[in-house]
Image 1: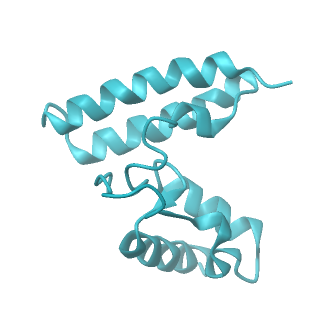
Image 2: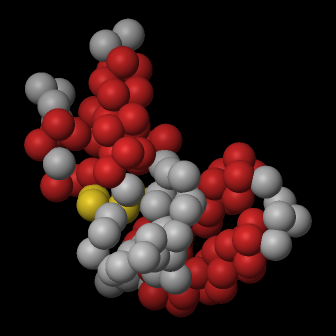
Length: 122
């Protein structure tokens, strides 16, 4: 059974992070790292990572954090055949470590998959 409270609680933190980022009170690297940390922190309490980033999951790229104009504009790397790669889980795990959350704009999807592939090749 999953603990939904931790994800919902951390989602409120992500809302604050995005607000501070939009006001330019914190920079991009810090915002991205904090959002990633909130997403991963749900694992301390058997939570669902997507619940921690629900407020931005469909509205902001999980890499560049830029807002999108329409819901459905972002794509999840889990469903991109390039992200599956020959080593499957390993490549997807590397991608997951590079992004704040799994839904990415097209440009970032291409860049992140290429970066993860180069890391996997090492």
